[in-house]
Amino acid sequence: MKFKASFTDDGISLLDKRFLPAIDKVGRVCHVYLTPTHAMLLHNLLGSTGPDGDGPQCVAQFAKDLLFREYNVSSRDGNRVAFSVDVALLHRAIRSALAVHAQSPAAGDAPAAIQVKLVNKQTPGSRSAAPFLTFETKGARSAVVQDVPISKPLSRSDVARLQDALDAAQELPETLVQVPDLQQLQNLVDRLKNIGDLLSVTVTQYANAPVVDQNVSATIRMEMAVERGEALSVQVSMKHLVKSLQCHLAKPDCTFYGIAPNGACLTVIFQYFIPGTRLTDKSISFYCRLPVLDPGTS
Image 1 (cartoon, rainbow, N blue to C red):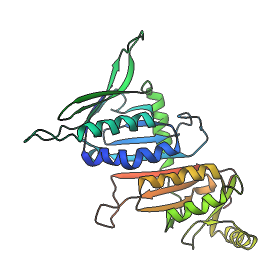
Image 2 (image 1 turned 30 degrees about the horizontal axis):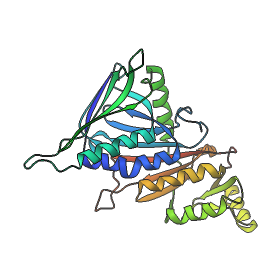
Image 3 (image 1 turned 30 degrees about the vertical axis):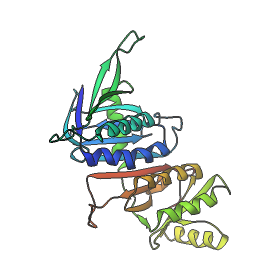
Image 4 (image 1 turned 90 degrees about the horizontal axis):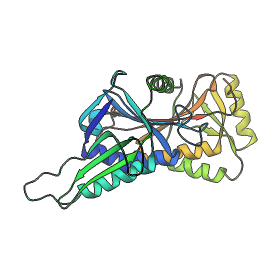
């Protein structure tokens, strides 16, 4: 299997300034999943990419042309490649590459693109070759090659499991409720997290934000809405909700909450607009799924 690509300036900036900081707050390790049309960062879809295997799932999916100028991925499994990587190490390599790339080029020269590729190499003291994601960067005064250690690429069966999990995660809730101010919601959750470890979240068909139970009257109102089939209610871990809210670091233009059918999970969808418009940017897809602590009520 092979992978080699050159970053676009906007693409590597998106990873550096938005998505890698956000995903690093959700979990330490993620899968990089490369297909002929998309590049993805997937946290916890297989439940084994980090110490919090039962925590939130996180999916960041990008059209290949958004991230890369030149893009070549090939394998015997439909030209799909996947591996796990430490998010902090990946982010550190990208920051270093950008620092070298920022050196002023010689007069008349265009800055060289930052290249990334999969390699197998034997490091000093090791007896066999190991896989790395290698970044190559040329600046005006220096050239840098950085090797980020990765897992052995996933087998065909594990890639199939990852794709199945991704397909399942893309199912949208029937009702999505927009959060008008994500920072305000985060401030509310920060105040509530010292009260208890669990949070009841209700999404109604006729409200403009998720309703968090805070008093008896609100609870009764929500129970009546659930009984009428106008709402879904689940319990989630406060820790998981706090982690998912860290995705605001990716600076979405809109945020929506929804509860999957039968209360399977709490879904958070982050929407992006094409710059200068209110049109959805379909080249970016970013969302989280929080496990529920009861089967939910519908």
